[in-house]
Each structure stands twice: as structure tokens, then as C-alpha cells.
Image 1: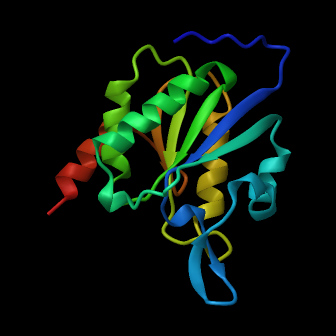
Image 2: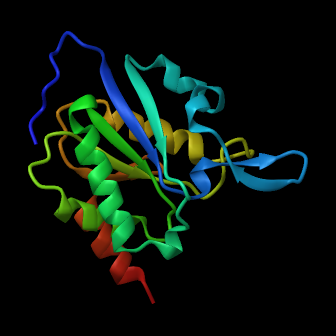
Amino acid sequence: MKPTQSTAEKSALLLIYTGGTIGMKEDPVVQALKPFNFSQILEEVPELGKFAYRIDSYTFDPLIDSSDVEPAHWISLVRLIEERYDEYDGFVILHGTDTMAYSASTLSFMIEGLTKPVIFTGSQLPVGVLRSDAKENLITAAVSAGGDGLYQFLISIEDLETPVLRAAVDCILLDP
């Protein structure tokens, strides 16, 4: 895969919401978590509007509970990235934390010749909840995907950026 965008154009990121807590918001009427509309991401995380690049979103339908992720989901993610590869300078995959390391590691083997960042992130608490990690994790992932010459798969959680293969090894070693 080769980059095709000229440097004069505005950079663009694609946020891919697969499922997970990071894309949830409490419904005040029923007081239950529901996915929010990522086309309105700037309302939830206005700090993203300060970046010098366009941010678009894609939401999987149906959303994937990360404990139910399977190879078909990974194939769908790879196809989406390949189909949109020339349109974007980086990709942020919003994923449930249960199996994020496994998904990220698998995708790192499935996509060859990567010349753009693919950053996975998630959160323990939903957007809008007091002391949520969702906003900061999303902002940090967007900064990393924004094109600083870093062309690899990373997991970005709580101000830590971990190369995907290392994260998968750590996850396996810590798994009981």
C-alpha cells in the first residue's frame, strides 16, 4: 500500500468504531449505556476539533462485543482499511478492551506494506462519565494517527503507546 495524498491537502483520519465502552454514552431517560452517533464526535470530544486534520467515522453495524470477536470481524476490518486506504492518512480503531490486543496483533499480520498508522484504543469508562478515560484515550490515539511518520500498529491506552506485538505478548503472559 502506498500513500497517494499530496502534502498540500488537509490530512484525514478515519475513526472505526467496532464496539466497546469507548463509544457508549449513558441514556439519561433509561440510565443505560447506548452507543452514541460518531458522526457527532465533536459534540462528545470537542478537543478533536482543534486538530489540523479532518476526522471521519465509520461504525460497524451491528457493533461487536469484544468478547465475541472472531476472524470474520478481523477480515471486515482489513477490508474496510484497504477500501479506504487512499482516502486517509491514519486509522483509529475503537475496540472493546477484552480482546483488543488480539485483534490488533492479528490485523498487524493481515495488512502488508503498511505506510500509515493504525492505532487501536478503547476505554474502561464511557464518554461523558465523570473521570472517564475515553476522551483522553481517543485524543491520544488521534494524535498518534495524525501522521508523524509513525507507520505501525499501536495500542494507545492511558497515555501509553505500546507496539501491537508487544501488547499481545503482554496480554498472553498476564492471562490466567
